[in-house]
Length: 122
Image: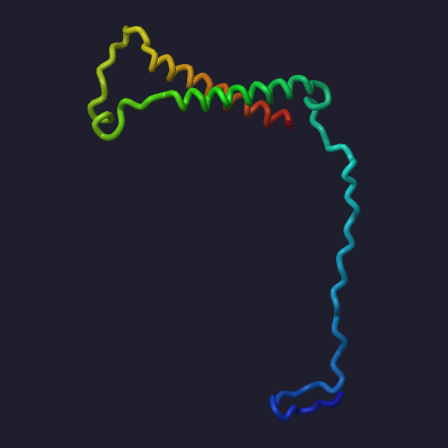
């Protein structure tokens, strides 16, 4: 091996440089898009249940959005937090309280049905 010194760079240059190693592409396996996806027991034996729950989940989600949209906030800011309003424990529930209760039911149903759907694999 002979070393040559370049005039302009003053660095040693190999007369016979080693060949450049070109990396070879990694062989990839062919993807079969027509292969069936793995399914859970619920999807195989009770698809009506998973699809019914998915439909119910959408209805509950839309209901929750509507219930949250029609609620009004009367106690905004610091005055509502500190002052509040006086309520009796034995009074009948007004429209606002019933709306809050129904919204809570929709929220609980949303979480429960969503959890069940995630466990069934849909």
